[in-house]
Amino acid sequence: MDFFQQVDLTHGAAEAIARGLYAVAKVDGLHEREAGLIASFWIEAGGGGGSLSDLERGAAISPADLAKALHTTDERMMFVKTAVLLTWADGKVTDAERKSVGAFATALGIDSATVEKLEGSVKEFLLGHLAHVNNTDATAAVAKKMKV
Image (cartoon, rainbow, N blue to C red; front, side, top):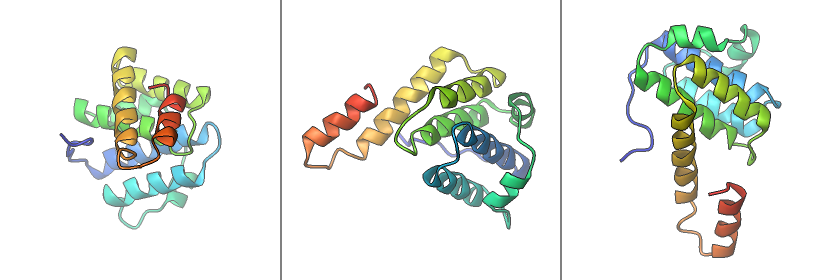
């Protein structure tokens, strides 16, 4: 099973998701890895000639506006899963980031139990990339930090 299932996005939905991800990343200061993930998503989702600087110059998207732009459950779940993944990009998830993801999830009609399940799948995905590491103590330390 793929971590991300294929979801066809309109340009408007892709832009709204990128703007939402940018809003989540900004709550505790935009980190280089977060910016890279957002830019990568924006390019791969068909952002065209757009760049991260276009998102920086634009108005912040509210949870309500994101909910208006994302019409399907798949789009909404993809946003929340991607936002949770983004929160781990700098190695730590802050309370402000959790609160921001929670506000978006609520506006998107995704309950806290589902968000917790998505968080678990993100942690499994990230730890899965460490499965080949021979240093099991380091892998265990990362898992402990993620509270898995």
